[in-house]
Length: 209
Image 1 (tube, rainbow, N blue to C red):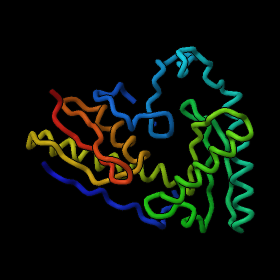
Image 2: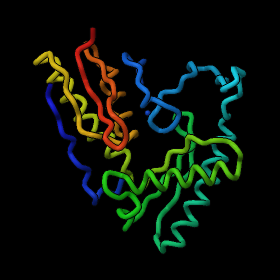
Image 3: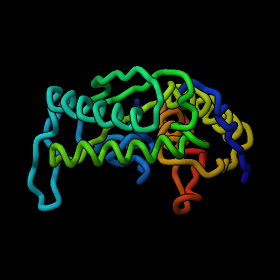
């Protein structure tokens, strides 16, 4: 089995699809997931078997506005300058922060960004009473990281097809795993799945059965 390391995103960076061939529990209800509901279906099952409406675009935009206000408050406290955009993209609320001197809000491999995203989601939940799939990006980090991971995934697929053996990638965050799953699942002859537990959870790319 081949092991492939992932190139680290540069800290100076001003930083979700075809049907999956392999079902993986990384593809869950946050920025790393593919939704369990079918496209065009506006309901989703609850724990009791009942159905609830998924948020409409107006509600999603309200979530992004709440999140943007929260992030703006954090920037003020930290004395950071940044332009904040709130929008709805891919059926989820999105807040993007752009500006200089924002690297500390991203952290190593996006760890600080992930923590800030969870705090912002909590702020939205407290304001609306509804769990949010908000995606927070700072300085374009996620977009840049997604490009890097696409290259990693394609390289792994090439090795699997050439040698016919599974390739194990290094441990990744849920966001990073979702990026790799998306690329691999769009290619024929290979599947991807995750193994291990956080924070050492990683993807294995293998030949399709």
